[in-house]
Length: 579
Ligand code: ARG
Image (cartoon, rainbow, N blue to C red; front, side):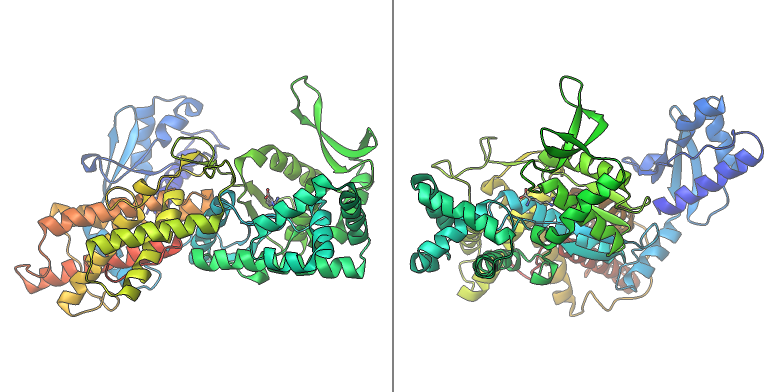
């Protein structure tokens, strides 16, 4: 809907430009928002206020001219000027009802992508394989997965890239340990964290061991077969740990999505050579650097992107340049989205700039760092175990399931054990994911079990429960929410409000896909569930007075149920039919 309104406004702008009312060459981004108060219509735009100055007109005068120039559209009943010059659009409730009927008959719920379909690389999860996944990897994994699902639902072609850290000096230490103590290593590998610590301990206490570790890095880099064998073995084990976490988290990542740093090894010399060829390299203390004037340090000197160390070694940034080139030239991506900690923002800004200058990516490819904030403990400080260690992701998930289990058991002591377990899994894992996804991506947040497992507020349990309530209506009616077609009549106020919200699903998904912000989908589902509650309270469904009304309300309920289910699935949450 927002998109159609944008198009109407664009028509009006074109007309006014033709008539000479507006100067040539204005290409504003037209903003259309949902109104909060329905007395002000359903949608509002500030376009007249934005263009008043360049047009040399008063905002309200321009607003009136725009209204006069707007094409007729049967979805809009009237357009009014409000306040300093807002345009308020009132939606035709018959047109709204028709849209919902069409959505109900469509397995994609009437959702369409606003722009052209694209090929999108999503860089997500990307843990370092030397260690076990810890809570720091949660955000990248689940936010990236949710955005990937949304873009796929909108019809984009999504290519997931798990850019794991599978190369670097730490591997020398791990290989040395594998070599020295094959038996101990075998059992300790079931706990990578412990394995890493044991290897580190040997590295710190024995100079010989440390020397061997450094030697192994060199042999590994030189392609020594035995080293490569050990290295493969280690990575396979580490990746299988990751895969278990992905499966448990219900994240759509498979071994086929792994394209780690090591995959770009052979490209690194060619990256440096290409930069040299373009005249972009300068030497600084023996290191090969690209200096970019826009990025300066505190003293005002340009910052370098170092692509090769004095000793010849390559860096994180070099690999990222190679990955960008691959994503553009081999995968032909229109966009690449990087779900990586906000603290790497500068790295990406600079690397993107170097890639552009060097022509590693096609000029119209969009490179977007989708940074995220830190997950803190309840005390607001970085999340740690009691003794100050990093929290392993599996431990966190275990605790979430355990707590959900106790909660559900307390509420429904009569449930069979396996059903309890199944509900506890959906609720526990769902709660952890939802708590994260519902926060604004770029802000830090406090991880709080009690809050995320509450049945009140914007939480997974609340939404999962809201869905089961809709499902139970259909059980009682003896029908399914999937097969309903037919007419919807919007009469009561609560029907209208619910309908208006239902019609926003597509707009919300488009914004989530464009900006990489799943929290908007969470708030949307939360509001939808709230409006459904009031609708349910005020508008009897199964006990409706007339059959036509009952059917119409059932259809609204069906669309609500399917929207909730689809929305939760896009967030990567498993829904339950009862709980
Ligand atoms: N392995 C890196 C880390 O743990 C994240 C990699 C992100 N992706 C990338 N293309 N740089 O910090």
